[in-house]
Length: 339
Image (cartoon, rainbow, N blue to C red; front, side):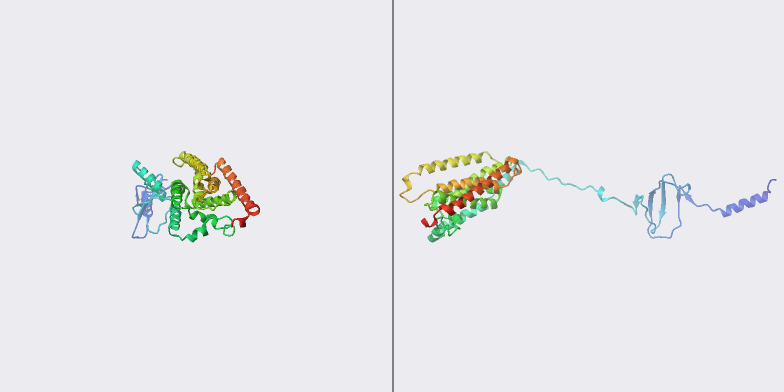
């Protein structure tokens, strides 16, 4: 039985009054929120949109949120008109140093080469001042004398501060500058100072054992220790120092000239003047420079196996030399005989 027309119109009118549509604008729903002073568009990626097409558009959800709305974990985009960037995304500007010209490189090399050896210059100035201004009584108190050093051990080093004359001092000063300039620049003043002292001690002990009647003055033993120390310096820094071939050559030339000079003066030419050359101090000072250089100096090739063996052999040589000197001066050396 068909319904009456009036009943249908009444149902339709009630349905329209009870159903209130929610205003929708292109898939966006305006939520009733409290009035706020600042609002922002926040764009969220919605991976699982709901079934309601009025509140969710395909793949995204845009809502006008208020100030109290919390931000979701997937939030990205524009917030208050500021684009959010992470610190990692900001690329750091790297300023590359400008390449040096040939003139600047040569200038740096020249400045490095002309830097003065502070220890060598200081010790030369001190020796020259002591020689020119010091009283004569200091000479007898500082020189190495047979028997006297046994009770005054400082003479093992202080004899290098006094010289036989101005010519003797000038020769030692010039050779020390020529030999020790580059050595101190490459190894530092502290290592050169230790080498200088070790050469003096070795020269004094060698002169006491081989020339027991000779009074020794001068820094020749220390200068010869600096000379022979260039050989371990070349081995330790081979490939990193300039003119490496010239240094062994200079050692051979100066050593040969010293031997020739000692042979020429070995006769009785200087016996009348009372001036004798302490060739034992020169020889022992030169011999001490080689093992001391391997033990004291440092370089780029220090970890090489051959250099390590050289260090071990140098340590053994120094131990044998010190032990031999101690035995000789304890049992065979008559200290009071020459005092």
